[in-house]
Image (cartoon, rainbow, N blue to C red):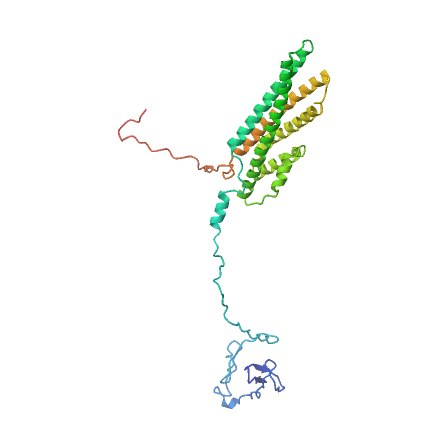
Length: 341
């Protein structure tokens, strides 16, 4: 027995029991459709039975149609849309993505934050300090020779006074040269690190005061100054090439500092042998200081050979294996003429 819903038009098979309400939309169900009288059929009662494959589709009453309904409960109704409200208005023109920072960024790249001394100034300072150390070592060698001569021969008072005050003068000149060289090198290191970090788009992790303190405080600079240089070399991808020069500079610097500390500690000796030992220590200290500067020049030149903006490698095009052979060039001689010798 089939009953049709008066609202949604769904046909329900209620079998042999008449129902009143539609299970889907709760609408009223129409009265069940009665069986058609076979006497009024167009085929007649004597029509031969047809097979299942030849059975025609059932015809719906007028005003009804088949619809596809998914099984289960009906889907929930969509909630009503909320009103959008009034049209947004702005008191000023919005500036979303209108600010162009390209010019400012290019200007920042063109002018680094910190300008360091040029390479010529650094080279001149290093060379001048190296000359001062060499002269100081030579003066102390002369003083040692005069001490040896003074063991058997009395020196002229003017010569003895000149030797003493000349040693004091070259020592003061060496101290001034060391301070000037340290200031120039630290300024160059800070500016180079700032330019390198800016070029690679990274932030400098160490403030300026820590770089100055780590490079100027005695004995502390032995541990931190090479670390700052190694960080810069690793950032610029130069550490593989500068590892040995940096290590040699570090070792010679530690040895020079040790000899200098010993020479300063024995500088108050009053006996002849103590003065001679101190003179030898001062000579070795100045020679090792000059060697430290020589190794430092190698490290500095290793950085200056590659500017920050220029890459360390140059890429060239090479032929693929099997395609490297080029076709021979065509002859340029005229037809009928012998080729040139």
